[in-house]
Image 1: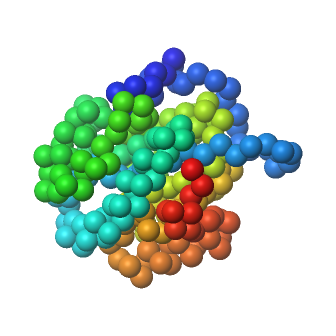
Image 2: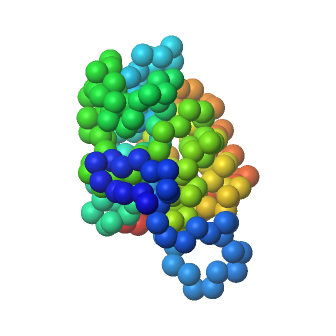
Image 3: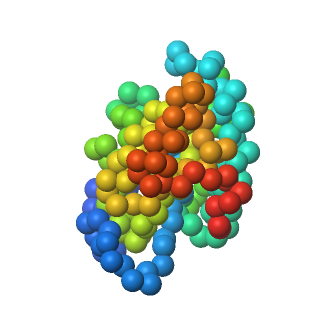
Length: 208
């Protein structure tokens, strides 16, 4: 059974609760259950695009911190999906320590996972690719995702597409995601809105 606490990763047995494949198209009077997915915010900023990324992360950080605070207060599940920097023996605590020891700990400390946060380690762009995230979300009866973090035109975009084809509703707060290339980020958000039916809003408009 999966356990929550200390930024708990998903155990091999998986989380408890019903696992539902996909969302029925005719769910009458069903309440939407959200989760906040924080993508790659535990970053060492040692990669080649970091200098281009950092200013945008600084701009997005207040919106991300606000969303985290309100989600936690409202009891909305918070799931961190983070790259493991190619270190396959690492766990969430080590990933956090590496990020805090990187070039910009001031961008990491405000968004560090709390004791109730859930954690999924990813190795590719999408938060769903070869991870237990879908299983985790289904077990929590989540059917709508708010995606925040970095990078808008890369991991956020691919994660939104994978969420869409799995029948999750997708919302992206435009002021709580960070980009490397502004023009590509704008195009990515337009694609999410037009091609996937996603909602592009301001962080303050997320109703938690």
